[in-house]
Image (cartoon, rainbow, N blue to C red; front, side, top):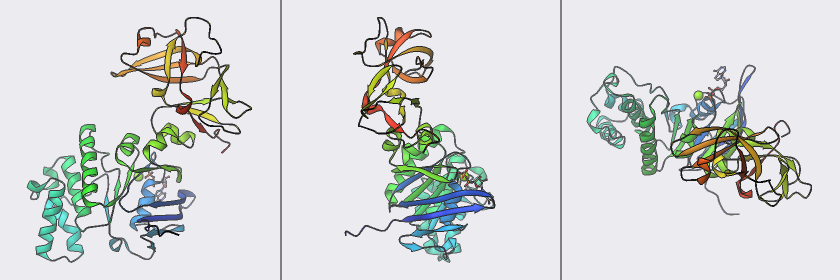
Length: 362
Ligand code: ADP
Ligand code: MG
């Protein structure tokens, strides 16, 4: 057997209950050294609780948390070498930026000269070299969040936890901070666990994404896989627009029937399933004559059209009443034909389809 490097973090069957509420339910997850891991889920799904269990501010009801192969249940938070950044920066208002950043070093009894050196380096890392003497109230939200980041990194942690750190910033500042965070992570080679409810943020930043719902980890994969091959309804819906369709599997296991048409699967499958298809993979054509069996695609009727700038999002209705989304790019010749009520043929390649367990059957 080849020795695998020990994961930076390992949750092993971790559950946290608060009375009748199960905030985190049997989570097992390994995070590799140097990974940028995003925990993605809506409010109340258990993301913060999982981070707090790792940071040591809370303890699991069941299971254990390991760091680099060692169980940390007996290790107090300040000995875990973890930097934490919260959404509400939690800066000390009566301390300057430099004093805020110096705080964790003071707590660790780092001498004055080394402290000054490290504070300078941390402020420079977040591009705030000139603002060390400013108080939080004199800084913008983005700058305050940079101070919080410098404070989390100044003592050289091996792991950085960020809990919705950009949630309070406007869109433009967030995009800019996302790039900076990636740069800083690359420079330091540090492991990052990043909590967000924003799927585009998770996709833009993470090597891997873990989707959480109701305290459970539903799927863990790289962004491309989660997007193209979601493993259940929730994951499919959470990561971008999609259409989930009820279909009748063909008995040969090679395809399915939808709207009276037999369509191919990317690979053979047994049993019952729903299918999911992303709007950018669905093309539309004008349906002029009768729809022959040989013509690929299913008949549908345009319901509505939304202008997106780069093109249009078109909702069509299948004969059985199910709706399907299609994105039409500017320049597609079908665009001038599309209008509510018009008949179309909707088509997607077999590889664009992912199979989902039928909801409730799991
Ligand atoms: P998220 O960060 O994904 O929004 P949380 O981890 O904060 O979710 O919360 C998960 C669930 O656990 C929620 O239902 C929340 O109300 C509950 N919860 C969290 N902390 C506590 C606590 N200290 N006492 C009781 N319930 C809690
Ligand atoms: Mg939270």
